[in-house]
Length: 307
Ligand SMILES: Cc1cc2nc3c(=O)[nH]c(=O)nc-3n(C[C@H](O)[C@H](O)[C@H](O)COP(=O)(O)OP(=O)(O)OC[C@H]3O[C@@H](n4cnc5c(N)ncnc54)[C@H](O)[C@@H]3O)c2cc1C
Picture 1 (tube, rainbow, N blue to C red):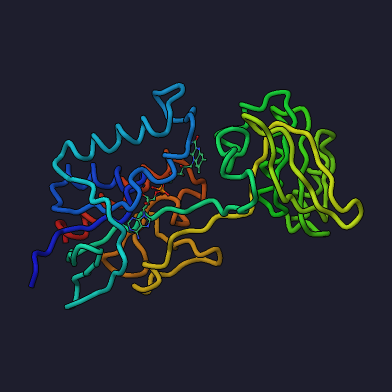
Picture 2 (picture 1 turned 120 degrees about the vertical axis):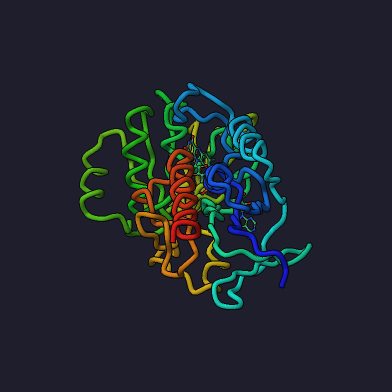
């Protein structure tokens, strides 16, 4: 049999890197795989809610996380894990384009991606008016006009959150009916800063250097536009659970990995951390991802060494 590591961490965003730092300090012999090192943090223009840094570019902070993890001798393997399976009782085997690796435990930290709309202008203006995270970016739109695209609870919450800063918030939904809970709908309609536009499809985001308008399609006016400064896209997230499913790891209705308070899953030896899980009350942030990573490493250590 090939060499068997104590632990393999899949995903080198904040959750995976924090898990690696703790695993190293517990002297767990481990490997860390990250298809795109840093994950979503590469997309954060400025993080303003990481304690100790009033404002820091996402790329800088993830660079420091990576240097910290690698300082302990673990090199991030910049490879995608293509498959994972259980072999010989308690041993897991993962496979990348470059080989197979075995370990006695796994931490799944493959994150989640904000669902994109894939409309013209969306990618071009991400970070320049287009945002997927109101908690992160709302304050950049003080006294500005913004829209939220979506019709569920998260879109409603984001629209309300934005009214603390923006002077006007459009909530744009492509269907006639919003799926947000009635309580949220009451709050939306009671807020004079919010205007709900139903039955409207945003088909393009336009501007010069930054967002200036969205093009809408609706059955009444056919095609029209709204001048604004910011577009918050709230059409859901997609967790990267393909590998987890192959292991029989249980997920919730939204495909997030169900975790216990110690970040263990229903499969013994498999832990999960970060945006991919139901943990941290589903509050998906760098801070919560790193703490889940730390807890997962601590639990892996306990399960391997303190049995
Ligand atoms: C635009 C934007 C702005 C944001 N702003 C903020 C902010 O200001 N403050 C804040 O706290 N949070 C912010 N967030 C949220 C924050 O980035 C996430 O909560 C956090 O990155 C989640 O960390 P994670 O490690 O769980 O997942 P991710 O960051 O998604 O990392 C997942 C990792 O897994 C890897 N991976 C996936 N599948 C595989 C595979 N099969 N094999 C190998 N590797 C794999 C990916 O390449 C990546 O390295 C923002 C997010 C976005 C998109």
